[in-house]
Image (cartoon, rainbow, N blue to C red; front, side):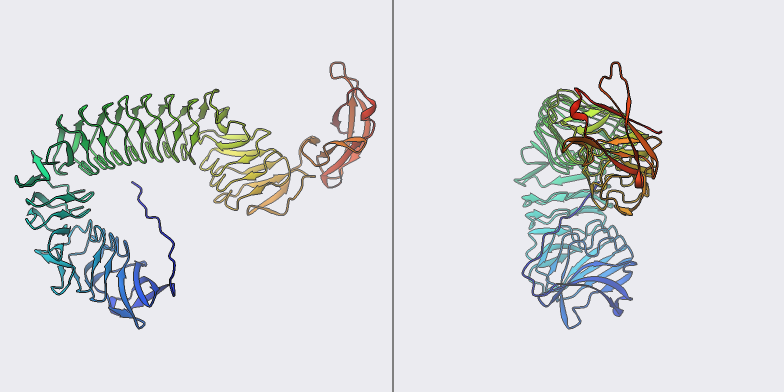
Length: 607
């Protein structure tokens, strides 16, 4: 499942400096540092990274090291221990995430803020120790708490067996137990009143979550965690195997409730459920089939993402939307029933559903998100109904089996020609299906080839672009591995510099067309000499001129061309009216006699 962080602009810095620094005391390990306002933040590590015991200095170059940024040490798998100095005041979210070799960490007395999951997925971490003089945090038996131990911040993933949360704890932090592969049982004390998101995710050995009966916020039944009244299922232990029937009292399945329950093979969702939270079943790698009742209002983000064994999904009539990444990485999904109640399909909703061959988008759907069906490598055809008025970028990106994108004729916003997707006016080519190969001629009248329109169309060998095209968007043909030639029938259009990234087709242009240089979007240009002379209908000389009718003839250098005319195409009598020599492959033609005829038709021939 894709993850990411969106940075915010930094303002009001007296100084802003990004630099690489080598610290000899740390076995020549390299760090990426940010200097601002006279202090240093560690924001990353450079290859090859860290190994062994790491002691972070309190200062370098005369400046104090005060902060460890979000994910700064993530994936440093060879680091075995870390000592955080007293100068550090802030540790960002996931700062040491996925450091699989880390066994112990020591936090100095200056730290006053720690983000969510600072040591998440550190599988061998057995102890987090806090300097006793620290005013904000403390540790007991290797677990990290706030100072008065009302919040459990992080439980070390290397500790196994059973764990009872102390009665002093009122809050369990987000991702507090995430990634603990050895923990078998958790008991919540009587005072726990809030639990952060994904607190028990990827606890694949966890067989039961037990709650003190006097707890006023939570309860448990057969080891499954609910709110006190039993209407919200909060967490299903990841170590349980087989099937599970959700009780009929449940109206809400919480975010991450079943996340990474890798041995769950089937689940029965009762009609009482109206809400399924984000990531609720994400990573349930053994789940085979699922039926979502019509009582559910919407499917949120990543609900079934990474359910790699899921083969069939039935969505009940009543569900209004399919959210962001809902079924992404469901590699074996061959059948999904989308009811007429669905009005929107979110970004990446079916991303990498590589076994999905056909899909019917029902009438009523008004929007398809960006890359909604991207990397559905077996998808052959798809029909867009008349109701769809909004389509995000690259809805069918990297679909090498897709032969046709068909649009119902009544659609007010989109259309299709021979399986190629256009806007309604057919002035913009939106997306070319990845399974079509050979040569393709863009229809005359198209003004824009959209960004990514031909991206990963690896079977296309040549494309002919009419003179009506004035703009080619970013990565429009990037990459098209088999594309060897692009033929332009008109003047050089405006083009994004990335349009042909990763490819090297020859770019051909007709003699007599304008604004062509030796290069076009980084590719060499070549004159395109046709087998027969042609009239360039989109040249500046085409049409009525002063007392004449004119056009540009294009063919080959220094060859003569005869222009013939007639007045009747039913019974034509063609008469030669002018012979032109094509200097540099082109020549302007002008007929001052056209006004003396009731009609005038032209053709070209060689002498």
